[in-house]
Image (tube, rainbow, N blue to C red; front, side, top):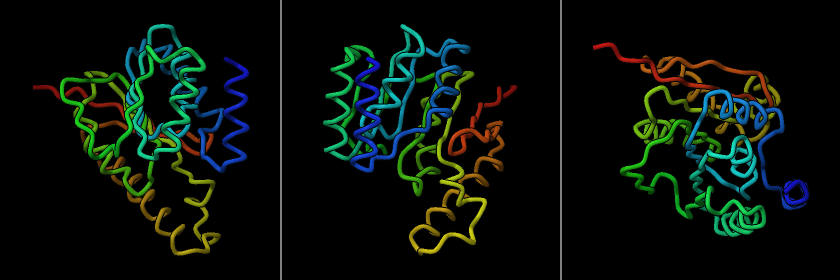
Length: 198
């Protein structure tokens, strides 16, 4: 398993595939363990790196992960199979915004896909959250550019930074969730649904 993970890290560097920073995935693995998380939905599999590490947090956590890029999806399937985790990690090849997960619910939803769609992902998938469930989002610092807009020098980068800022405001203004922001890795948020008292 360790060798496969090291191989994936090398592949990510060589092929310019963004994978989660080590501090961030360690935080999520610890959260899974401490909160007895049984099922995780991940938006954005890439090559399966974070899904494999989340599955390693405990022996009884199951992961559903969605990836729309065919090359990355195939790489993720290969890596999951190599680790012998195909019974606990279900990789869905589709655009997350097209996926229908009716009948499923999750203790943890991890958003780590197209930054411009973060609000759409949150609004769509929050309905699949179990009571007491949590939504964790990665890359909210976006390589330090969110807090340092003056160093953003292309229009496309500025667009991404603007969308991340909008998402942060969306989380802060969302009355149904309490969100904490962590200066870990590339910036994480943890949004916990409030218990609506009747």
